[in-house]
Length: 433
Ligand SMILES: *Cc1c(COP(=O)(O)O)cnc(C)c1O
Image (cartoon, rainbow, N blue to C red; front, side, top):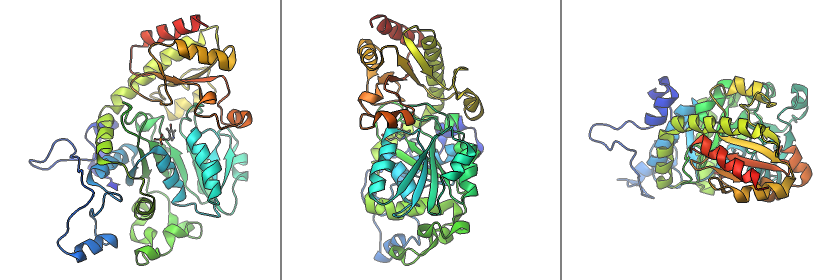
């Protein structure tokens, strides 16, 4: 797992480029790809200490690998956390982050406006594991939020900018409610990235990412990340979190919260138990590619946001477009929240509705030349998607509405191309319907 180092005193741009890895004299300038499943030890006793978590080091890449750890350490610094881990996907990150503290019999509260895959994970798969979830509107009042808590509630979950609804979460409101009820707030910061928002500064306790999106940014490697703020006092709520606050018999009875403290307990448990047992580990090659993306994240996010702002403003002027949602538009319901949480820009994704609904949306997309139809989002190349007929097709109309993904919604992910070219492409496709 990655640990914080001195890089945190620099601005985010410097951390993007140089965080996580400082080579010593004569060592490789770029993060080495340690393509090895196994690590060698002189005695069984040496290795035994690692197994018992008594010493730090590597023994098997399913649990930890030096390449992955260096990239995790960079993301940890970017988010301002105390420990972090990489995973094989954003889905794995969402599952590990929640299941690490919410087991069978537990209850979670989640914003209803979240990524479709996360919705499915919570509402269907974790439900089968005996975990209940209550979905609340991201726009709910504090009283409505308070009413969702139960004695067995273990966490609150939301997305900084929801994919694809583009709702902006009032992180302070959700953090305040979570903390008053003695549980942590977990924030999926995928679309905003730490370049545009650092949820820990606003009270989030755990931050998750699908690194597949802007962090990688080139459509090259699926991945996920979990960052711990180190701020949540597990032992102060020990009755709610026995997994962290009582002895783990599979590690000779160590108690994570005591042994690794507030800053390290969460990630150590998620690595030692969940990664050991589920094995959702990224390859060192993928971690290396992710790091190449991180090196330019701050440069790319700026352009993604500029392009999206220009495209959103153009769409608002189009007669064939019924509505446009982009947090950077003064007409957006989320403009004020975006000004507060995302003052330097939100993301490159614009959602809008086309007159004529589902059929017209599909036709529009067929005529696009630059933007390709893909399930992907947040890529250097522009792409677009009609969620109701693809990624969200398992959801009922009612669920779609609650998730902020109406049937006519087109999600347009602005890449790094020229803004006028993107606008021209959209204009010619609209002309054809
Ligand atoms: C894509 C995405 C995920 C899932 O990530 P994968 O890397 O595809 O598993 C989770 N949350 C958000 C906001 C996403 O956009």
